[in-house]
Picture 1 (cartoon, protein in one colour):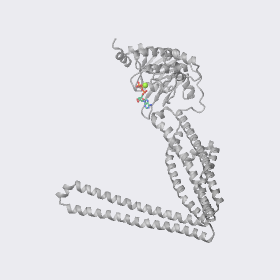
Picture 2 (cartoon, rainbow, N blue to C red):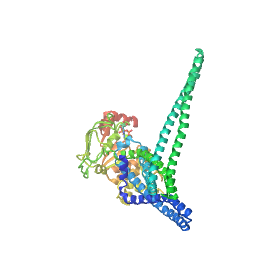
Picture 3 (tube, rainbow, N blue to C red):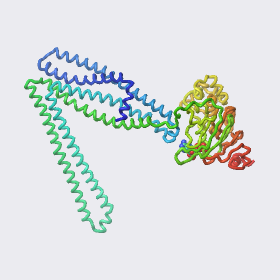
Picture 4 (tube, rainbow, N blue to C red):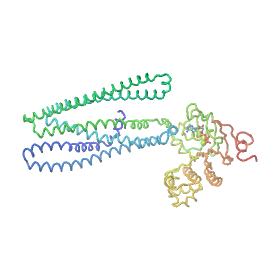
Amino acid sequence: MKNYKRLLSYIRPYLHKLFFAIVFIVLAASANLYLPWIIKDMIDEVLAEKNMMMLNIISVSIVVVFLFRGVFYYGQAYLVSYIGQRVIIDVREVLFRKFQRMPLSYFDRHQTGETMSYLTNDVNALQNALVDSLIEMTTEGSILIGSLGMMVYLDWKLSILTLVVIPVVGQAMKVFGRKIKVTGTVIQERLADITSLLQESISAIRVVKSFVREDYEIQRFCRQNELNFQAAMKNVQLKSLLTPTVEFLAAVAVTLIVWFGGYEVVNGDITAGALVAFLTYAVNLANPVKRLSRVYGNIQKAMAAVDRVFAVIDLEETVSNRPGAADLPAIQGHVTVKDVSFGYKEGVPALQHVSLEVQPGQMIAFVGPSGAGKSTIANLIPRFYDVSEGSILIDGHDIRDVTVESLRQQIGIVPQETMLFSSTVRENIRYGRLDATDEEVEAAAKAANADAFIREMPDGYDTQIGERGLNLSGGQRQRISIARAILKNPRILILDEATSALDTESEKVVQAALDKLMVGRTSFVIAHRLSTVFEANQIYVIDNGQIHEHGTHEELLEKGGLYSNLYHIQFGKA
Ligand SMILES: Nc1ncnc2c1ncn2[C@@H]1O[C@H](COP(=O)(O)OP(=O)(O)OP(=O)(O)O)[C@@H](O)[C@H]1O
Ligand SMILES: [Mg+2]
């Protein structure tokens, strides 16, 4: 219930609307209370007194009341849905903001489908809890209270009698109903016993016969059969006893009420019409009671979804700024990795004691087998994850001491898997820097060797791509992704196998674009194809989360280690 209160706190901005909604709901519900009231006038004035005027008044007022009821109903439905939808949209936004801020490690542990279901299914369940139950509770609540009020107003003595007698009968019905259910289960159990006994003795019939135990089995069966009969009889007995008892009790209750009401009419305390109206109100009580308990059940169900939603809202955003973290000033691009260890999971190290240093503008390369930890090093520099041990410094600033935003703003990443959004080519490139002009976007595309093929597309830079648009080839996608990074103009560049998915021809074009991009920037290049890293100032061979060896291409070849092995495999023994 704590979370339900919390959910209701989301309504706070719409309290004034809620006020009018409730007024409308109450007004619409009170129209329902008007009908029994008319019955009273119909009997007392029209039928008894032959009052023609009253008949006209009643007829007109029915039309008028139902007209207003329609208006109130509209107002109520509109306002409640408005509030409900607003709250849902607000909650959904809060959730979406939350997910945008969650660290990558959260998404490693949770599937996309799960995350999406929070935003869709759970939020919808929450809407049901909120909107539907709010309307029903208010409507049925006002009918309940209104009917009770009318009953008391019409005849308070009869009301007391009714309110004492009806719950007693109701309670009796409930107790008896439960008893019948219990004997029902006993019958079921006995029947199950018989079935298993049957199965056993028939499937074991060879054993039975070989031991000549037929009579013994028959006795056993008869005993069970008898037990079943007794249970069945007990149930029948109860049922045939209880049903008439309850009916009798109900009849006594109704008779009591009707007798006392009739007595009052005879006595002249109330009119005949008032009695009929009273009884109609009393019958009307049944529905709200039933519906309110159903609403309660629905709320219970929806609360599971509400709990899940709030559990997500309360999740901690682990990689976040230290208190008082300053922005990273404009950097040169001097990167120092100092004795860094890291694991995605406790006890499973992905990197161990990695140290390296890169001067501004240098290009370094990571090579090595799959799963060695190359991408992991690249993930640590923009703080997608925080190191477990050691530290990473950029221009002497520990990256954990500066704001994540200012750090990532100065790092450009061209990932292996290019993600493009369902939008135009232009907007996809502009994602790198939102305030870039069209000229800057096109200049970046030119630098990425993408301008020519973009211009050949149906709408040029305004062509829709992504899921609902044109599908681009892998090389084209990568060049758009490179243009995006160029536009950002970062000091540090991370290229994680940016050309791996390409054929030699497209690789040349993309590589040319990358070479342009890397000029004057500190670049980390991860590559399987060694041809792309010959030029690196320093090549690090990563194996098993550790730096196996490092040096320039020539130095490593001379060494004759892992790198030269890889080289000879890829290029043949030249
Ligand atoms: N998000 C993650 N959650 C858990 N473990 C991960 C995650 N990403 C990588 N790992 C594990 O960390 C280790 C290093 O992976 P990493 O992605 O750095 O390898 P890599 O050298 O980039 O390999 P590849 O050449 O295949 O891209 C692997 O054992 C991998 O299973
Ligand atoms: Mg990788």
